[in-house]
Image (cartoon, rainbow, N blue to C red; front, side, top):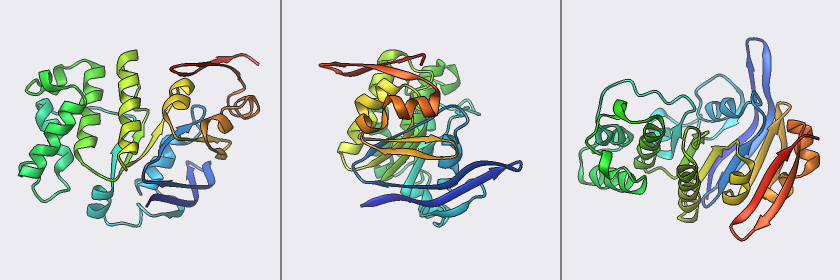
Length: 248
């Protein structure tokens, strides 16, 4: 089942072209890592896909009504400020607003419980979210997106601010969601994590998609030198590939 379909997406900001002719699709069961240098347009592409900014081209999500889109895709933006002193439980419950129970029905409570358990937030459930550490707040916001219970999850740098153990847990969670039949698109800066957990990588640079395919086909010296001006040293381990960026 195709969850995301983008065709010839182009975005211009302040008379500066950011993206041009970007086409991308994502099916149920895929965990797609969006990689590329800073300023390549990864966040812009997600926002355009969701219809949050003006763009040319076609996005199946942008064509939906706001209500339908909120049931089709959950979004974890890069800027993750918590504005009010609500409990972690109430923060996670905000993910249920698109659904009939509005956060308090039996299905809502079950989804909230699942999300809190899955992110290991049981001990923080009644704590004010503003009193959590930055990494703990990030986990609570991932739980909010998870509680939305949508077929598709878009996450912009979801592992940012997490300690190494939680980075691994976050990526493993997204991998498992894909294995359960959801689709995940996440921007990832750590190439080793992307190689280890993503089923597919999309390399965005020069305002376009430079490569789209399995990690082994995208993480090549030629492509990474073109996009980042680096080369890599890859070491295959029993736990997955270790990738070390080095100067060219």
